Length: 324
Image 1 (cartoon, rainbow, N blue to C red):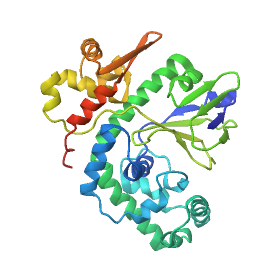
Image 2 (cartoon, rainbow, N blue to C red):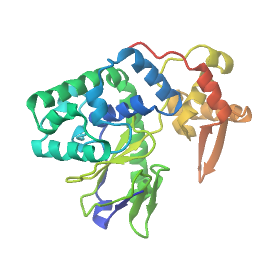
Image 3 (spheres, rainbow, N blue to C red):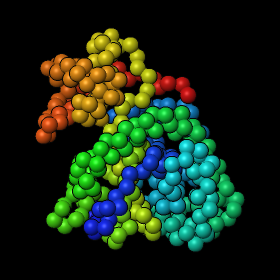
């Protein structure tokens, strides 16, 4: 469990990232590659990567293991969509920080010999890391960047609306089922693989919605400037459809079922599926009666998710991903 302690000043300094953080998305996609990701979206992406990626990813795999600590210097926050520009702060990491953070990696995972030149700050090793990150990003993330950008923007809009309507405490309490806000203690409890406390002490908190973040939110080990919390968004299916499911259900209803794969409200599903809210509601009624979707009401909002039967149907229809 991660417990983030707020002061009144911190609540006034809760901010939302302006867009997807390229380095976070790139590094977190490596986790998808190594440990898999839930749902048809992750499976389809990994299938695509199996045919596109070079097998020589040893340096990146060693720096970003599928679980546990990853060095903070790999994920500087920034909204640039240019991978060379986004990687620049990584290349400017000081030797002392490289040594410290690769040392932390050694404690949790052990350090391979291939990382020792990087830990020593050798210019050739730093340059090789930058080239590997840019090359990997261009194959694994950049072809899907429009989807990443649009879906992160949609999540940001949802969060901004919550912030405007309910204030910072309302936003923190409704942002994710993985987070729970306690007003009595001014604490945000976040599902986390280890026990940790983070006192903001007036620095505020930057919330970064992420497409490739899977499961629990993530934060940096060292929070020297504005603390950052990266959290997963509800994704839509980002790969080509075959004709079977639309032929069975109709194109619009099939799109609504696909949109429900990661759950969401009626309006969220309508947006993902590209249909009117009234149409989405009608399609969801039919899908619910067929046992493909289940729904629950919270106050004035109805949330939907696919059932196991609906998941089986989606998995059965998943086609090969688009060529990029």
